[in-house]
Image (cartoon, rainbow, N blue to C red; front, side, top):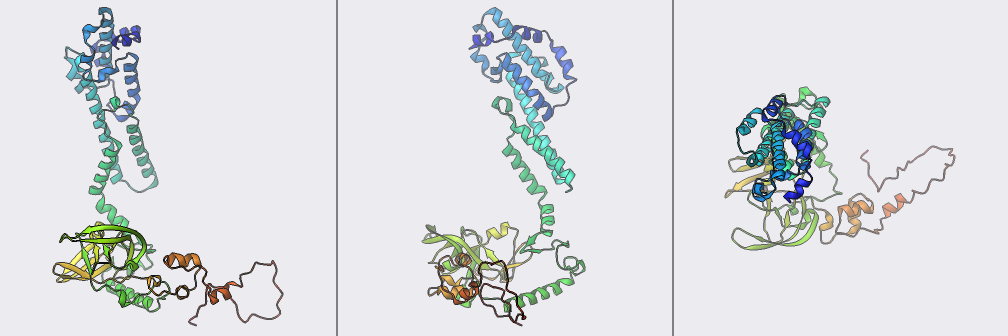
Amino acid sequence: MARKAFIYLKTGMIQNLAHQTLSQMLEKTSNVKPLTITNYLKQQNSIYFAFKMQSLDFFLDSNWINKFPRDAVEEEEADIFWEGCESIFYLLVSHLDEENVNKFHNQNSIDFNLATLWERIKQHYAATLVENCSNIITKIFNLRMDEQSVLATLNEFQYIFVANNMYQSPKMSGNMPTLEEIFSQIELAMARQGESVIKEETLALRVQGKKARCFGGKHNPMEPHQELECFHLSPEEKEVFFNRLKKRKEEEKSSEPHAYAIYSASIVDKSTILYSGASFSLFKNAEKFISLRKMNIRLQLANRKTIMAEALGTPVVLSDSGFPIYLKNPLAVPSITSLLIEYSPFLKKNCCLKAEGNVAKLYSEIEELFFNGKIVDNIIKTKVLSPVAESETVNADPLILHQALGNPSERYASALYPLVNLLGIKCEACLKSKSHRLPFRGTFPVLSYPFKVVHMDLCGPITPKS
C-alpha cells in the first residue's frame, strides 16, 4: 500500500514545498488572521486536498508509524516520502497560532507529532465554534424584537450551524461538537437565563379562551377593559373586577342551554383525590371521556394488589372556575371507588398548589382556580363536575338526543354522540324547516302585499324571548 502511495506522489510539488524552511513558515503564520470558524471553512478543503494529493492522509491516524515503518521503502522513495511529511507539517503549522506553533518548533521527530498536531488543530476549532455559539446565545438573550436585529441574528445563527454540519469526514471533524450537543446547550442556557423574562412577557400577552389577559403588573391593550380599570395596575380594582366576573358567570349559568350536555348531582364523584405520586389519572366512569380507546392494562397498587384498566382516552372535568380541563391519557378503571387525578402535570405547567389549614387549592398560572379541596389524612380530596353527554346513558333515545342538541345535522350529532346511531332519524321539525330549501329558480314572483312572516330557514325551531 505504501508503494502505491508513492506512485501518485507529484515529486516536483513535494520538493518545492520541502524547500520552505520552518522559519519561513513561522514568518507566514504571523500574517495569518486569528482562527475563526469562517477561516477554517475556507482552509479545510486546501488542507485536506494537500493530504489527499500526496497520499499522506493516513497521518491522521496516530498508529500510522506501526503500519508504515521507515525501512519498508527504498532509500530514494524514502527521501521523497519524508520530504512530503515535512511539507505537510509546515502546512499544518501555518494554520496554527503562535502558542501552538511553539509547542512543535523544537521537536526533532516531526513524524511522530503529525497526528497530535492535527488533534490540537481540531480542538482549537472546536473551542472556537463553541465560543461563537455562546456569543450568538448572548445576542439572542439581549435581542430587541425588531425585525432587522432578529433577521441578522438568525442569519448568523443559521450560518454557524450550517457550517458545523459541513464537516462530513470524521477525520476532519474530530472533536467538533455535534448539532444536537449545541442545541442542547442552547436549550439549557435559555431555560436558566431566559425563563423569568420569557414567562413574564409571554404571559402578559397570553390569549386563553379567546380573551386577552393581563398579568405580572402589566396591562394588555388587547383586554376589553380600560387601563384605569385594570386591577393588575390598581389593586383597589381587584375586588370590583371579581365581583363583576362572578355576576357574569351567574348570569351565564342561569341562561345556559342544556342541549350539549347534562350536568346533574348524580354524576359528581363523592371523592376525587389529587395525588402527585400517581403514574396515571384514573376514572371510574367511561362517560366522562370524549374519546376512548379500548385496551387492557394491568396496574399494580401500593399494597401490591392489581387492578385492570379497560380503556385509555381523554376525559373532561370542569374546574371550580367553570372552564373545562382536558386531561391527557387517563385510564378508565371500573373497579376503583374514587376518581384519582395526577396533579404533577399541572405543576409542570406552572400551576400553584396552596394549602391553608385543611383546605388545598390548585391555581393555574394566571390565578384561575382549578380545584378546591380538603386535606384528609395527608390526601387532597375534592369534588369535580364532569359534563356527560346523554348518549352515554343506558336508555338514550336518539330522537330526544337530536332534539336536545337543537336539531343539528347528522355530521355534528355523530361527533357529539359517537356511541349512538343518530343516522336516519325522522325529525318532523327538521323535515318542515329543510323542505323549503329548494333549488333557486332564478326569479321571484311579484308580490302586491307586504310580508306578515319572514322565515329564516333556521336549523330547528326556536323560541325567542321577546
